[in-house]
Each structure stands twice: as C-alpha cells, then as structure tokens.
Length: 92
Image (cartoon, rainbow, N blue to C red; front, side, top):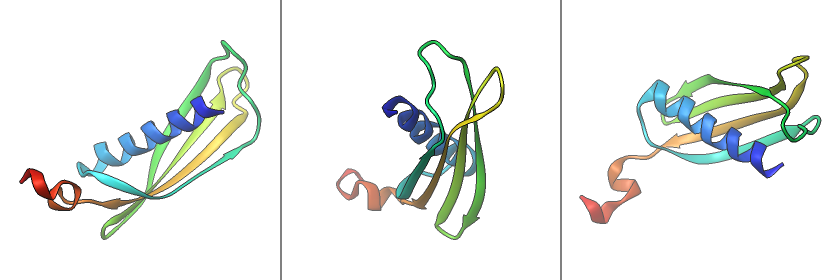
C-alpha cells in the first residue's frame, strides 16, 4: 500500500501546483483503501482540485482498476499556501 500512498501524494500535490501555480504544505492527508492492486495490474488515476479557499486548497485522487473501473483507493489532501519566505527565509 505504500506505492499507492506515494502516487496519491505526488499526483495530489501536482494537481494543486499545476492548477494554482503555488508551493503548498500539507495540512491533512487521508487515504481510504477499498481493495488491493495486484502486481502488474493496470490502474487509472484521476486527481481533481476540489476547492480553493484563501490559502487552503483541497484535492481528491482516485485509483481505479483499469479493467473494471472498481475503486482501489481514494485520497484526499488539504494543503496550505507557503510563501517563499515562509518556506526558506534564509534563501532570500
């Protein structure tokens, strides 16, 4: 299940970053697992930006079996905006 969590983590952050063009820091990261993917099984992954409020953004990531469309895992992330000075004040 570590691979699925990593995929959800990376694609969720990429969806927010590509939609908003900002660096974000995690506030909440949650995954629900419904079944396991088998070795070599093809999956489809879809990340959707759900909401953007002030400094907070939410995204969902679905991992489904390609052959039957059944849900394997659903990840939800809330992220907060981080300015460059907050992220690395010594590098300004």
